[in-house]
Length: 285
Image (cartoon, rainbow, N blue to C red):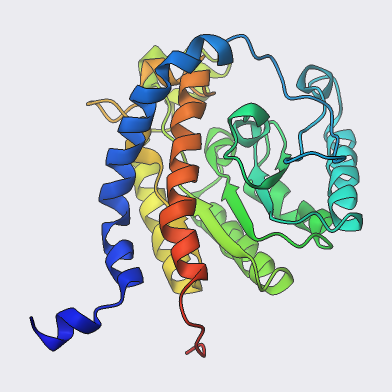
């Protein structure tokens, strides 16, 4: 056996295999968890926030949230973040984004962490950037960011979206220097099969454009020294569109879609994030 083989770091080996293992493991987990679909199919919304003897932070009733103004939503998220900060919630993981994050069933979020959901329906990259400060005082271990689809629907240019993404990354790295920042890819839509109320605007955004934007997001993440989780291929059919069984209206996710996302977060956390936290620390270049 060569010397290079003996000294090849195990974390580097895992890093090289992450994409392939992630895809295979997610497929297996989806198959194993299909028996749960009937149960999760009747879930309407997470329970109200309760941190006493709780293993995760749940969000308020989502039906009520849809009747709130944007500022009222921000105020609620600020209150939730304040609770997490004041109680110094351990093993905190934050979901930052739009309705896709907002509607993530708390029952499906990976166990062993306290989750703070900071999603708002209809959110844009600029809107998220402006409200990042509301969870400044929290001490998260990981922050997952998914944002951009609403920008595209509203006709915002790729350049502006990417610039906002850069600023989001810069802000999170500066404010939460010990947290692992994970930028998640923008998900595809169902194209002609979409039934969402804003279907015409959605169809004006080609999935090929989303793919190109994701490639640039990955490049930016690499340059900024943060993680990038490519969820896009897990949700697409042969045509490159969002698979029918993973969506309710061609844009938002079904319980099965959230099972896929949960599986990806779970496996990515075990393979990539945990392996990095166990690596020897070194100086930054």
